[in-house]
Image 1: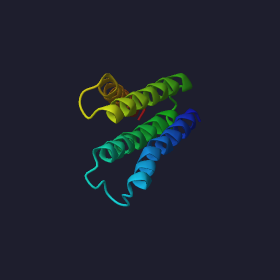
Image 2: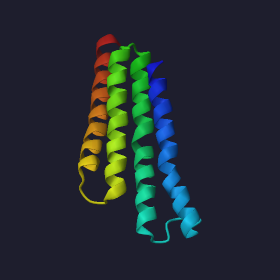
Image 3: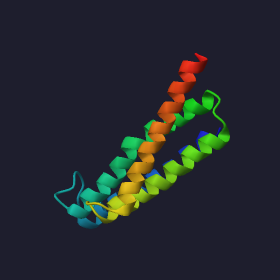
Image 4: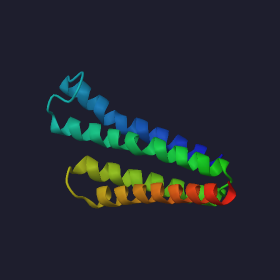
Length: 128
């Protein structure tokens, strides 16, 4: 299944985004929470934001694939997802304010959700 490729890539990205949190906790001796440390707070938010969006999108992709969506379409959504999450992590990881990566990463992520949601609604209503 094509979705599995993106689930694998996103799982690796999940671990990669966790590394700065682990490293900062160790270096700063912060076992739980963020102790008000802005750098750790940002790393936690980058990771948490990934967790807030990616599982839903992978589920939508899998449902679309099971319903017969072509691999090309699944690849398109998957590539946009991965690129968007990389942009977002890079942008948010550098600045809590506006950044190119954060803006376009969010936009791409939301467009993937909208596209997959529309596809699933269309498929469900026209073949159901």
